[in-house]
Image (cartoon, rainbow, N blue to C red; front, side, top):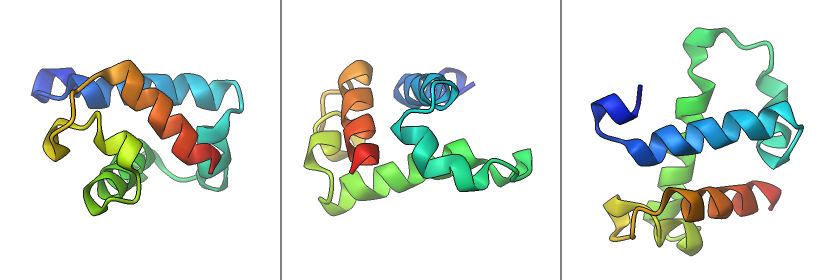
Length: 89
């Protein structure tokens, strides 16, 4: 869906995040307290919004390097690696 509205980066990040959740990775660790939240809570979009905020405010420079909105290169796999690293803390 994200690619259809012009964000292949977000589509990739959501896809990789879903894979990570299925294998109990660092994204799952962030989201597990919201496991029972209704679908309407849009937890995936909230995750992306939070990651975008970190990139915009300079708290996640590695992530910002790949977000086009912060002048980054738009590399989806590199952005995923940075998002996973941020999630690992």
